[in-house]
Length: 112
Length: 113
Image (cartoon, rainbow over all chains, first blue to last red; front, side, top):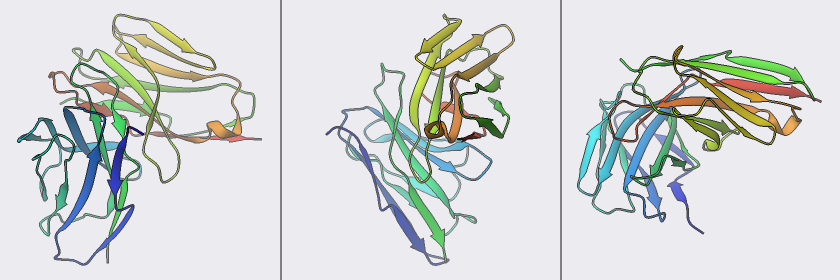
């Protein structure tokens, strides 16, 4: 089945630790996106990538880092510099010529 | 900057009634307007979308209208059912050719049986 997969579904992090969220797609999409979702604030763009080995900051990139070494994969690292990391993180992908973006099922990150 | 405002934040209707959710956008260059439905603990799923060269689009019980001049677009759900209960997000494409979407704040729709 074609789709976009995020793992893990739930993640707990101690303060001061970096954690990496996985996002993999087998839709042959060029563009991939990371959004953060907080209650009452909709989805805010963290980083996006339109091509392998290239990515751009979104609206709330501080405290996050990404890599795009393969077309299928766009991992997000939440660093210790992110002051309020507890949130629901969503990854999406789309073809460059397409309009529809497909979302993964999300990763809920909690700082303990 | 680019912004999308969505109202209301919560909406409760009786089964069978209609529900309307409204959005306004700030960037006149936006040309694509999707609506997503998100069920609890899941990722958003596209339910309908509209391009700026069209004023209205319908898919069974769901319709979207667009007023480019006023920079408004709305989602209409008729004959609501309990399974329509979810969070709905509107979005508008960013002005650059990056595929970025600017999302509204979301509307929690509750359909009471």
